[in-house]
Every structure is written in structure tokens, then in C-alpha cells.
Length: 124
Image 1 (cartoon, rainbow, N blue to C red):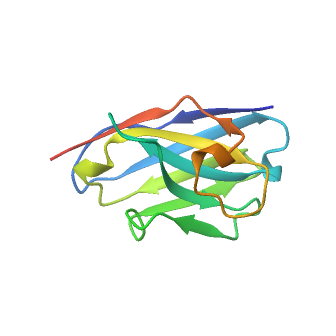
Image 2: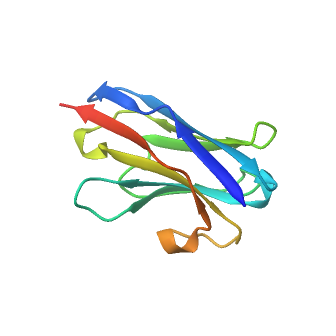
């Protein structure tokens, strides 16, 4: 089991920045690739970003590419999502997730463990 706890969400104006954190406990954090997803009201959960176990490889949804950066610190068992140039359409609950497989995965069902989510609201 891996327990994931997100933090760092909040209310920000359009054009602003936020950094989300996801702290992991339980089994070895570095054994998992990590992803960020988001879900807006009335919409399906969508992929945002993914980082490999080592942190050397990252992958982003087109909608956030160039604005968001995913990173991880395996010594601190934490994955981050730096979000810049935020837009109102980025408003959602953001979730981190852990995936035991190495292949790039952008579907929620491919991830094994999930956090409880943190709300991000971007005002116009």
C-alpha cells in the first residue's frame, strides 16, 4: 500500500502560480511512477502530468505543457506540480496517483493508488 496526501491547493488569480505537493508513505516511493490528474465539476478525471520513477522522464497533457512542471524528490517521498500562468479552466480538484508500471500511462484506471485531492480555484 502507498498512502498519498496532496497539499498546496487554493484560490489564485488568473496568471498566478501555485505549487502542489504530494507526500507518500508506505511502500518504497521510488518504486512508483507518479502522476497528477484533475477533475472539474461535471467532467471526467483527466491526465495532467507524469514523472518516471527516477524523475528523468516527464510527460504532460497538451493543455498544460509549457505552464506546469512535475518533479519529485525521492529522498523526501514527495512529488510536486508547479503550476504557472494559471487559467480559469485549470480550476479543478487535483489528485496525485502512483503507478507501479514503467510504461507511460495517461488513463486513471492504470494507476494503483490515489490521494484525496486538493482544490485549485483560478479566478478571472
